[in-house]
Image 1: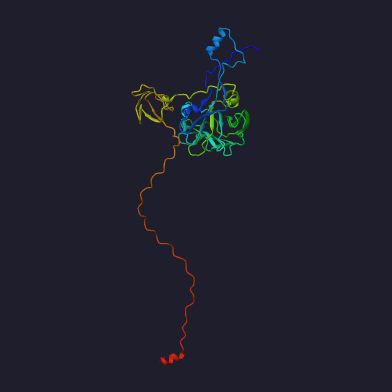
Image 2 (image 1 turned 180 degrees about the vertical axis):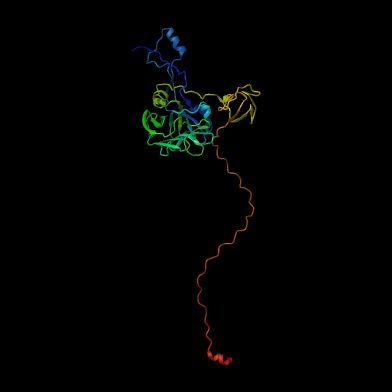
Length: 376
């Protein structure tokens, strides 16, 4: 057997948009707990480049059976609860627009006690749902909701029956490796490396979800279908082919490292919340002049032509509409209100129905002889 040196080269390019990183789930906000993912011991990395070059220059070699230099560790996943509010602006994820054809790559563990839940949902700036992927009430079906409100009037709803395998006691049992490919007028679902079903998606040509709103992870805006399981991976890839590469590239076996998924383009300092810019002036907090913010020296990422209205810096009228915010928590019950004023007198009621006939009256008999005595 020939001797080899283990090594691992991280990809030099991004392979998708990581929704979990976009909502900063690793910071463990309210309602989020960290847990072990699908692999309790995964190969993380092998020899770094410096060690490899040193070994090659000194003539050292390591056998393929020697695992001294292999680093392993558990996968990280995150348990979501109904208290979690995870959202990110869609324009921050896809500045050039949501891709027309794309793949959803996900690794998740449904909750046995409450399997139904929305993995993620997408809304436009008017609050209309554009896209959602949901585990059905029975825990075995997967539901795709698609609605491009700019080009179609009806919401499309596809149900993949029996797509989610039942819980099992095997290693990694219950975990689901999901790939969903959206291409043209079709939607193809792959689960745990097997192609399950392709359904017709009757959308219009070049249809795609809007990027003017927000993406919610684990919930909808107006629904109690919270996903309360564990999520390890939730990635949008601008290619329908990625759904077929879940088990080979995006979520391989535990003997291979996970790929480096691309970070969200543009940091917090690059994203501008909803602003109204008119001839270089902003109606709101602060002031903008041309492409710079007064007093900060930061260049505006929206300087120049915004929305095709022309004019360059300081010219034209540009309206940047903010996305609808996520649903807040239910507040405490307020105190009872003051007693109201006395209402107006009510109108007369309807006449009652006629009563039943009464019993016959008494009859008095007067003898005729009495009439004579009375002089009648």
